[in-house]
Amino acid sequence: MKIYHICEYCQQIYSTIEVEGPEGAVQLNGTCDDCASELGIGETFNSRGQHFYS
Image (cartoon, rainbow, N blue to C red; front, side):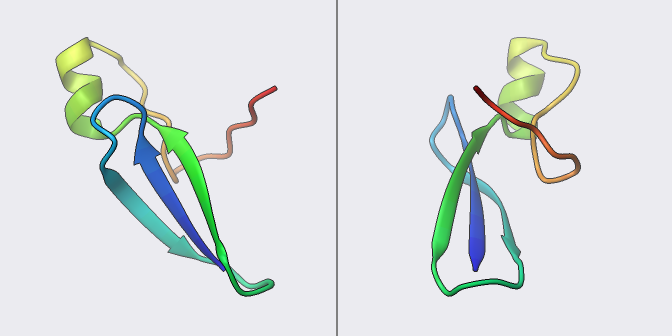
């Protein structure tokens, strides 16, 4: 399965990961490094850690 991380602000793909599992693709929203810098956000939400939304 391929996981695409898409920036919530610029809507660009900033990371892709392939993991074992069924075939397909998943989209996860986060903030790319460029947008995080422009917005003054200290920590970006990307593939370096697990994040859960409810």
